[in-house]
Image (cartoon, rainbow, N blue to C red; front, side, top):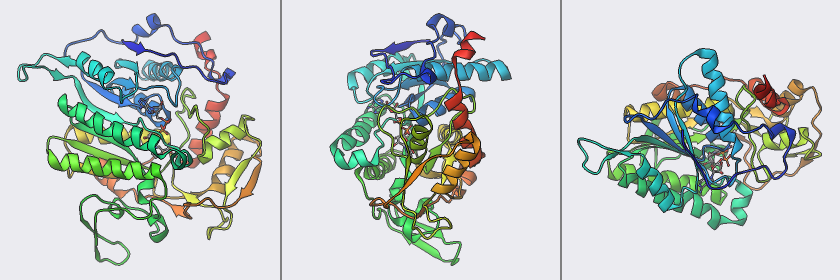
Length: 426
Ligand SMILES: NC(=O)c1ccc[n+]([C@@H]2O[C@H](COP(=O)([O-])OP(=O)(O)OC[C@H]3O[C@@H](n4cnc5c(N)ncnc54)[C@H](O)[C@@H]3O)[C@@H](O)[C@H]2O)c1
């Protein structure tokens, strides 16, 4: 197994929770096969981040060899060890052989470094004189994701999330790697969430589409475009999809899937992986975690005067392991070209909403603690309710969310209490 890491990440505020000793390389080697010529890989950019690390684990569990590219801008090097350990524990339990995993701690925008990585994965081919890549698909998580930060630093977002995407696609094109899964977001629906009870993929499209409205039974025609995206981050996801739709339309060899995540929460039941950003989080659950771990004194609840049962806003909270499995389902469909069109979007949501107050209560009930909170004004751009219609992914990818809000809270609490050194000592 190869690890190319230029910088060793370490938490700025080390805590016992995250201080597991790194697994020695020698120890790792025994979990993996020796390289073989026809080994195939999936490249995962941003694979040490919250959703990327969970997806890398699900990919390994599903038998894919994985190459992770991450510049550690919002994650830590030790997450790689945690992914390997969780995979090892899985295969110890279930039998079978753990696939291979590689890590390159590089910026995916660093074209020379990415070119060298791709060159190292070019193998001889009878049909292509210059060789072919043994990377069959790419899942692209790497991006900046903080809405408020994007309002203050829009160019930072356009550079990483869009310029980087364009250059990456160009590079992959040169290497004939044309299966691509893109991390999109429910943010692309903008304020459409105010007009529709639940959001379906056809509400935001990049080619004109028609769908049958369930309530009226009428065909509804939707022009390409978007309505009311309120921040640069959301625009990078919409533009990212639009760019990819154009690339797919220009070349049928591409198969590109945009996965629109709703609100991923929770973590892997092993307690080894969680959400551990370097920056200041703004999403509900990471802030709840900061209150539980004493880094914050209270949770700000933005808006308690929405027209919902308890006055707090409703979101489609989905367990991150379900989101991760959504990627293996999408990848399998894309690799076998079992996708209706060569650019296709899918919502990854549960299809039902929970209020902010319900999430806080569920967390309180699993950890038997009161989470102090303060009522704050609604934030600009917030909507009352944002819930997915999740039928398309069920129908076309065979994927549905399986875990509940309580599962997510329980797994998160498990992660917060878990001391992984026990695993190394046992
Ligand atoms: N978490 C959510 O609620 C959510 C919702 C919708 C969409 N998304 C999207 O999903 C993706 C993953 O989100 P996440 O929550 O796991 O975020 P994250 O910040 O935890 O993970 C992103 C990872 O990418 C890395 N990265 C960023 N820029 C990079 C670069 N230029 N080169 C190499 N690595 C880079 C970071 O170090 C980090 O490890 C992002 O594209 C995000 O916009 C997230």
